[in-house]
Amino acid sequence: MIIDNRGLEPPQPMMRTLKALEKIEQGTSLSIINDRRPMFLYEELDDRGFLHETEAQKDGSFKITITKTGEE
Image (cartoon, rainbow, N blue to C red; front, side, top):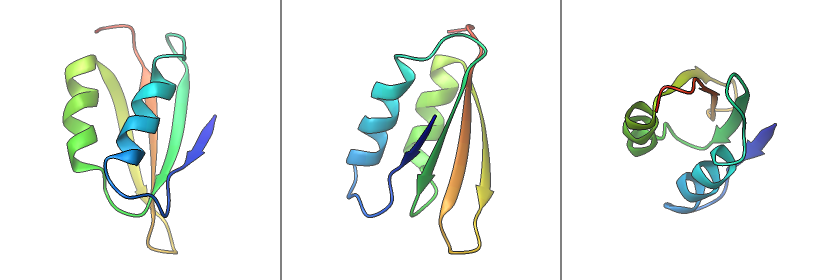
């Protein structure tokens, strides 16, 4: 699943992402595309036990792949 959060003002991208993460199963990944690095989201993901990897894109956006580990 991919969620494109570009063009949204904070906190919309974070809220959309967290809502989508409630629906995924352990071992499943979700990718989001944001205009900027989601610094506040990283802390929330760490607290909830999600793994995450960020890749800068050529257009200046960031793709973040989030995996549910089941270690909340």
